[in-house]
Image (cartoon, rainbow, N blue to C red; front, side):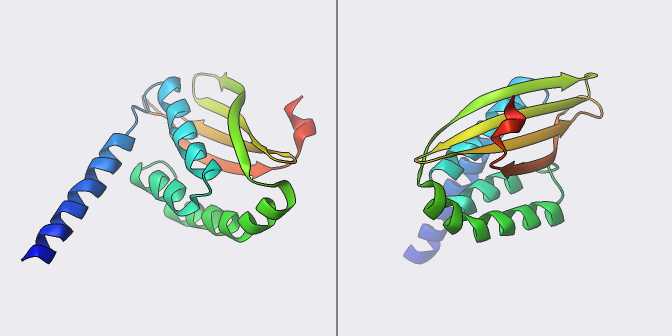
Amino acid sequence: MKRARWIGVAALLALATMMSWAQDMSSVAGAKEMCETFLQLITEEDHEGAYGYLRSMKGILDDANLEKIQQQNIEQAETILSAYGPAIDFRLADEQVVADSLLRMMYVVRRQTYIMRWKFIFYRPESTWRLASISYDDKLEELF
């Protein structure tokens, strides 16, 4: 009986956490908040939590692409950590809306010895921004 109660409490906590992550994706501010929640988890080296968060945002990105990006990120995380050091923080580098239907948000994740660029592209077919693409690299010259 106690075990069932603990499982119930854990399920409620997980649901509450996912609900607190829910964003209003009808505005650029909502898309920005989604990016920053994701990047906060990435800078804490919580890759599973970061991609779990994106999965909780139903309709954001199709599962096959998200799985591919997550696998790539997890495979490269150890290399990035050893080459560039631990993450310090992240900052918005650029935000651009095109034709009221496309949004690009570019962030830099500052690491101990180098910076990584994260690019999020959203598409708004009607009233809600949907994450269409997420990528990262170390091509800093493309920030200028």
